[in-house]
Length: 296
View 1 (cartoon, rainbow, N blue to C red):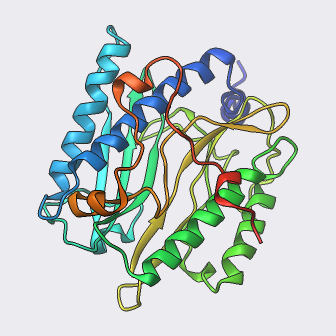
View 2 (cartoon, one colour):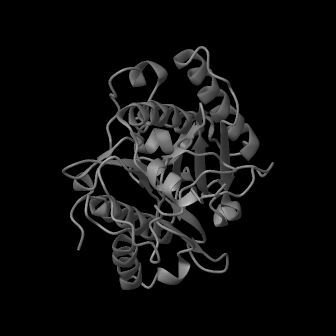
């Protein structure tokens, strides 16, 4: 009897998604969008983080139950951070109450039948300083450029290096904390991520049609500096024969996610998905790189 190591071949197989898997993942991305909308709905000065997270998670679980009536309802969750708690991408939820001017971070993770997706974006409570806006907008520009780079034939390492140069041009590279994205599919909070499909400098995998990857740049500004906090944007893209397709429909950036009662009165409510609008064909306006202007 001979034992054969199959971990790497199995990983390579998982990196390529079937049309059925992509369809399932896209449906789940819609659920994550609804979780994000629920976060925006719940955010208000004085509300504790855990209440925002509970509202988002309950919204996603209910829609999962409606969409997949016979699915197991487990492992769907939301992390929501405010203020200094945004200094880690996945910090635990606490009882800290939202304060006016807080930087906020939403992290929505629906899971169905062993498949998991994510929605992660930066928000502000009612107002943001000029330095907050500068940092936030620049991270959105990195995010936009990163999505443009996710095309067949591009190496993961090339994506990481170009985005490093972009951060370095603004003297922000030292505040980047982890990779720019990773594969999605059979995955969970505890296991299953494919090490061979990570947007890092040491990953030489070539992007191919059928891969599903995130773009999620983050910088963390230390607490003693102006604009302190963690800034992160996150979309999920399917690599196609001719480029990529963004399956995340949630808006992002300062023009959309300065939230709360007073912010809504001044800026207008952001266009967010509702269960009715998100069923079937997606109707939410998707922010794209082209709509945010050209990169320098």
